[in-house]
Amino acid sequence: MSEIIQAYVSRLDPKARGAIRGTAKLVVTGEGSVMLDETGAREGDDAADVVLMASDAVFRAILSGEQNPVMAYMSGKLKVEGNAQRALKVSGILTG
Image (cartoon, rainbow, N blue to C red; front, side, top):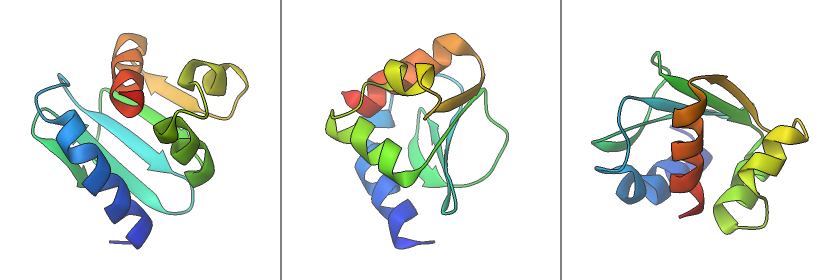
């Protein structure tokens, strides 16, 4: 597991525990992916209900509060595949 993906897993694991239904995947361009579900966060590339794709810089900006996830999506910096409701829930976890 890359250091970048490990950092996401460590940061998102407590935020995701018990806060998400189904599965979500964050694809960090060129680095790998993180799976989120009610048990927390882990490295993985499994099928998911919603997939959010962005660069490391965009995800870091979202996590720090410098970038609004909806604006990142609207500007094309963040791509979403799957359930839009789940995407909003995941964005709340990322920014919360």
